[in-house]
Image (tube, rainbow, N blue to C red; front, side, top):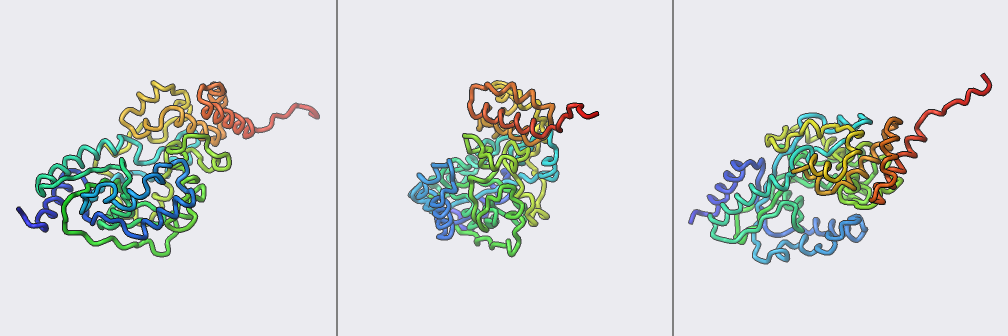
Length: 357
């Protein structure tokens, strides 16, 4: 059989030729700092509704608890860099802003097929078992990506790459064989705090520490209940996710637009009209977002988000749209409609009675 060095080179070549933009190798072990940060995150309750993070904490911190045979991990990255300013649509009050990664196809589906194909190649070359993951299991993918040399976990807690900025999607292959490892990436954030300073809801309690309960991505995607009243204005027109902390990273000067067509933005998902979105019923929602990660949150949660954006829009012409949803069967939607209606009415200029003229 070929030497370990040549196998690693073959795997790297195969990965890059399969549509991945970055690949690295690390041991099946998560560093102590990453486990400490995870423990502190959960103990503080920062994970909010994401109870699965606590119940499967050990599997995240110790990959061999998840799969005892794991000896090495292959980490792959796919660039999803935007070709326009990702914050450009935030000022368009009549439109919704969708996170860059969700403006086209669901990357989970896109990467899953390719990573399985790469995994089969690795299994055949090494004659061993493998397990593949694309955000589908308790895997600490960002610390592993740092250990594999793809980038470092920045102060915004996301991966930062010297070649792709903050725009890398990650996947992992656990391998039941020892491979030569790459050097861990060095943290190059320095004194910069732009990602922390820009957060609309002040969700960062310190560098490298995020309170997900205040994070707009969490609130608009993971959180199922009403969005807390005190955070709604800060949500602005963000109807699915938030890219602010990613977009302001200075390392994005080296970023490149996604080469993968399925990750390039669909025109209709760039600043979509709130007036049209708010009318979507379940079947229309499913048709519009077929193959999109947005479909995962369902119509009710999505319409809740749209109503928050409408309430923040100051556009009186949308009052009628909110009134139609005051009796929506979903109580979270109905409450958001009532809030949006009241916000718009409060924003309308006072009408003079004509007395005294």
